[in-house]
Image: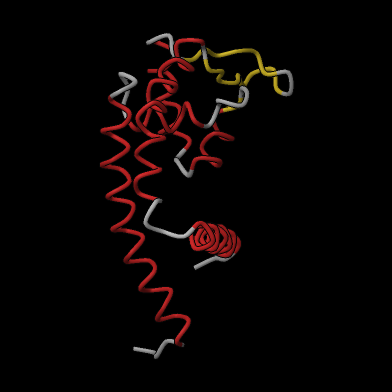
Length: 149
């Protein structure tokens, strides 16, 4: 097995820590989303359209999901009245998904518990450390998306 650099060792540790963190975030997201009467996956897709309608592939890229997964959730959101399909001005056949008032209201109800939760988690960590972590995560995402295995 080839040796790794110290950076490669650190990145491998980051990957393992990220797996663990992701599991904790997903558990928390499911509990938080219940306050809006939805699932974490529904919340994730709604989060991709809160600032405006988007095509399913755009939501998938933005939220780190598969196109098929977003489409499945989008259809459920439309069925439940939390989102709606609209004509896409840029593409005749592909529609865009837009949040309805009911969808915004569900996300608002989640925010009522998510904001205090986030504040409690963050209070033990310096804002500069959190900002540095966010910058590093974004750089890692860019590097991974730009490189092939």
